[in-house]
Length: 329
Image 1 (cartoon, one colour):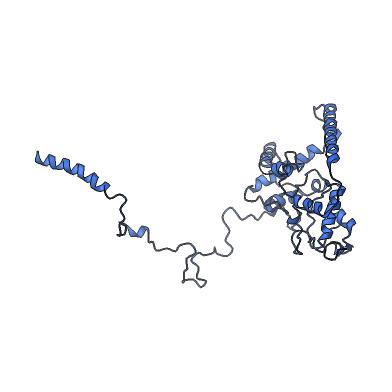
Image 2 (image 1 turned 60 degrees about the vertical axis):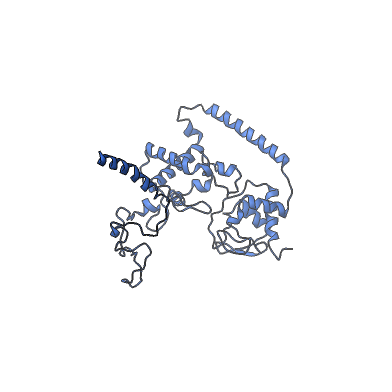
């Protein structure tokens, strides 16, 4: 009976003793039953190792080592180029229906925000006036006539302000997107003879197109009524900022993607073909609306045409460029 009483008191006292330890700070180190789990004989990342001449514990792979499955010696498939580094013309993957639908799916995920659902360059990022460089339409002659390898390279490596999508889009999916782009281009540029081969009401389609064109023309005319015909440096600066021209053309003389605007007006410019031209108003206007006509030496022909700008907007841009020339009159 006495033992039972002692056990009962112990059962009550033990939890109280243990609870009294909560929140107390101990100066003693924690109990480590097995120290070698924490203090192993190994090097931490970036730790020094005097065994090697360069002092690095983190060693590089043996020269010539290739990760299994990542040799990627097929330049046509992995880079979109031939042995002479020219872009390939043919897509190196069989264009099945499922493959094109895969391209459609990936295009709508990664490309439509800028290039639009139909590839017309009118994605939400462009039409929302977020200040990005306008994305080109895939239905212009320049891109319709480009090789498939070029389109693949743009997806893999990026171009101008478009980043590389190599991390997000696997190689086969890049080719699937290229295939779907070609399908988009055909759908938007099919001839009447080609359309008549299918069971469609061409007359109805043509009537709908005319109505859409008329509505667009009316909206454009209405917008033009309220548009300003002012030509000024201030307006040109605002237009340059809206179209993010500074991402390609510096204002301080430094060289980036395109020629600097500082001191450009009136200067002799050397072109890619070896000839020279004076950067006067006529040249600047042509460079804005048709940049591929005269490509400056040392710069890629990557600028898209800004022929959607009005004459007064182009004139204002030219006036702004002239204002950046210290020698301009």
